[in-house]
Amino acid sequence: MQRLIPRNLESKIRAKLATVPVVAIVGPRQCGKSTLAKMIVRDFSNHVFLDLEKPSHLNRLRDPEAYLESQREKLICIDEIQNIPEIFPLLRSLVDDNERNGQFLILGSASPALLQQSSESLAGRIAYFELTPFLFSEVNGNIADYWLRGGFPRSYLAQSDAESFEWREQFIQTFLQRDLGNLGFHIPAKMLYRLWRMLAHVQGQVLNGSKIGSALGVSHHTLRRYVDILEQTFMLRVLPPFEINLKKRLIKSPKVYIRDTGILHTLLNLETMDDLYSHPEFGSSWETLVIEQILAGLTRWESFFFRTASGNEIDLILQKGTRRVAIEAKASRTPQVGKGFKQALRDLEIRETWIAAPVDEVYPYGEGIMVGPPMEILKHLKSGKE
Image 1: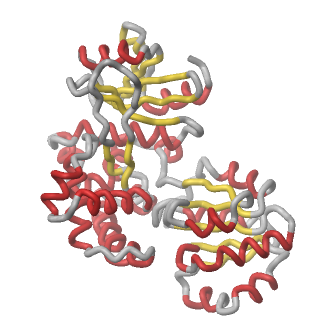
Image 2: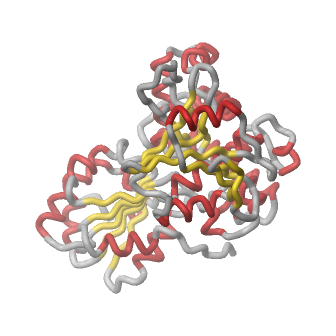
Image 3: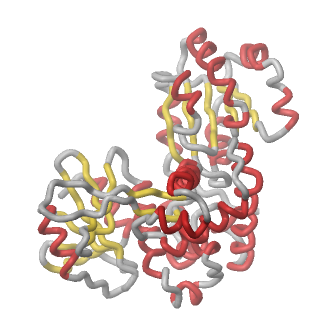
């Protein structure tokens, strides 16, 4: 039996249910949305939980208005709501008639951009939370195990690395062959799998859509549509370039990252840490871990990368109001940064700089740069101290 791991978002979701009629938890399949929702609703004496992947539960909504109206005094939780997007206008009507907060908790395996009905029908009535797979701050375990297996609960909590790898292989297959179709995307699974693997080999690099599209035999526009689908189903992160008026030619294409390191390693066929240590994507894998841990823990920060045509580069730039922070990911316990990175700091006049490395404590690197583990950097950023 797998152990239950508390999620960082739980208290925020509980608080939001007291202030808005509808709360939505979105995130990839199998990241723990249902488990979290069940933990929340069990504290409500009156609640009903509908899993729309179960025919018996779906059958209750043959006449959705009659059923939901009959449950109006309860907190109604609807899992995998993207299976019946036509229900959103009805939810708006019920919400407006009932005039109380905490009416619906809805779960979906697609971004709010894909759940367009909700944003159109429930504007001003709904709050969104994105649940990621486990964050390292939630599992509080061994960084190597987490890095290798990623954060999907069944992958991270598997009895062995082999069992974890097998689960991730099955997850990828199910995602391509079933989940995308359920979301209305009818793309050949082999085509998207080839793209996904190609992106794994160039992840952390600037996206060359024309080159990858040509290799797949599709247009640049089709390639970008496929990338958008993987982004909106939480498999990819597309990091935009930081644009500023400098007298230098800047890279304007985005970077792409496989968001979960476990999925990345499966696409690269890396089963053990020894496989990862000797692989060319070792450094970019650490970069993914750093970026995901930091961005998942922050709210209302903008995120970018910076690169000039001459190669001066910063992995991650965070901006909130007038505060601007540079973060460079280095997988070494004795990290070093080059002249190009320092020149980029001068170009952007950044005075708050971190190197995120697998080290045990925070220490100064010199020239105003600090070194630290990702979780300590996140704590510093959330503290508001410069």
